Image (cartoon, rainbow, N blue to C red; front, side, top):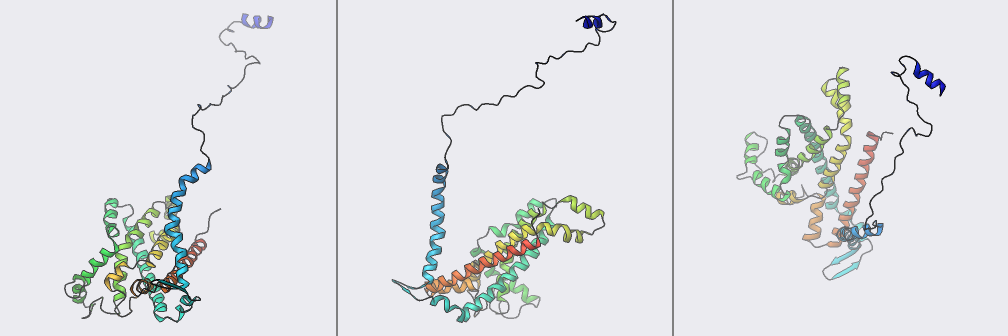
Length: 329
């Protein structure tokens, strides 16, 4: 106390006083946890959420799983009107010797390859051209209009455009010397190309939309770094943009691949599998066997093989993507 009084007696000591902190004062305030107000409703159990989802799961199972097993059952029997007879896997063993079945597979792969190649090439080009434009949203909306048309209606529209009597496209192709006297749908050499053009016209906008969404996620710092290093826009696209588009391109390819294996609306309207068997891809042959000749057991066997091959090819595409674009650790 005497030392403190001595310090206070010094001149100017009142101007620079040091505040003394007692030992029993805490340095930091203690935070108290907030308590939630009491509720009248107890926490829901997992069983409660299960019963909420159960009706939707049961409905999906009824409209998907049940028909799948029923298709397997029919594929193992000769299904006629009023009779179901076990056939010892005859529906499956006879398929390799069916020339129309084998030819349908070949035409289906040809049709799918042509559609995918044109749609991916044109779709990526349109996406790159539209990316960053001033009126991008308006142009994309106009580009998506063919997708809004039902495939059956699109087939009818193009049927009139291809018509050999008054079709505008028929007249145009004949005027420039590309098409001969036959109609584009009446010649086995051009009928497949005709239905491919319709599929490309209607579903290329989907590829463009998916690719355009992928272009928005391309890292701009990588593009700018390559430009500083002297890379051209084409090299920049190949080395930076395209690798970043692999995930979205895989989604686009798988969607269109599965659609090409099951959509037959336009082809049925335009050619019905003709002329001859020039456009009788496997789904059209499946439609004829099941609903034209009412061989439901044989049709179920064809549908099951189509499903299995589609799943296997989808898994192969996923494996190829994993090798081209390995996961980052």
